View (cartoon, rainbow, N blue to C red):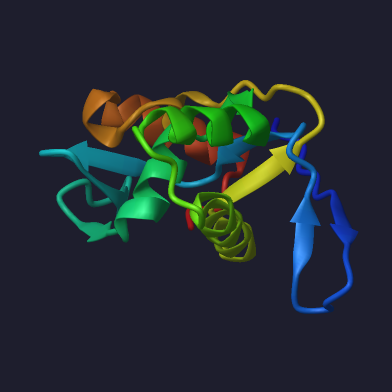
Length: 141
């Protein structure tokens, strides 16, 4: 069972929150990775998918519950020879929007994802995933 936890610190602007980057982040949705494109997948209709904006897809695909937001930021910084000045703001915005959309959650401790969220849909045994989803009472997003 996944325990969900949000931890924010409100800062000066009521429209802006600061994320506790020591927390782990994990996905709550089934996804697909085809030809380098990350999309939301429908476990009941695996051929159907909804493509995600590239930044959302990167964060979703990395949201394995084993890494912190600090580690995500460090990883993303390593992808550039010259780090864009807006990288941290962009990542925070993407993370906040994914949290608001219930596509990722935060936890103070590492999270072991259930089978059906642990890998892209094309790597899953669909019947096993559907059975486990039903047993867990997981609400498909």
